[in-house]
Length: 145
Image (cartoon, rainbow, N blue to C red):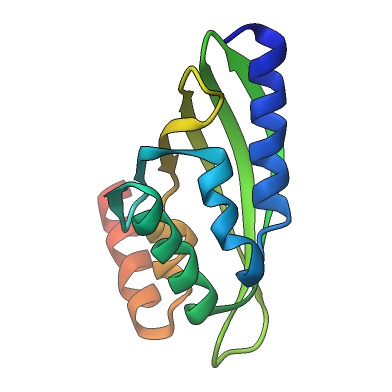
């Protein structure tokens, strides 16, 4: 895959994420290879069906989920994205934001063959849960002292 093809594939993936909705989850097949590997702090799966289940679960668990890609870099079949994930908890008020990054590897067909997300679940998620958050902040302070 040449540089132009890779940039096109990366832009197609960014568009997929920034417009992701329950009715577009099936487009996973267009941007991910059939046996694509996907890993984030909660999941480690392979293949279209498993990746689709992750997004379906996301839409069932949170309200108004939205990805915003902030930066992107691509070179020799690999790409790196920084992003924000905005959402509301189903039973709570207020928007939340998770900031993270993704390392991507593209296959020769221009689809994602490997997707690895990096974000701090403790800082970005657990610390915002009322009882658990206090405990996580206490652990962080003790570890820093």
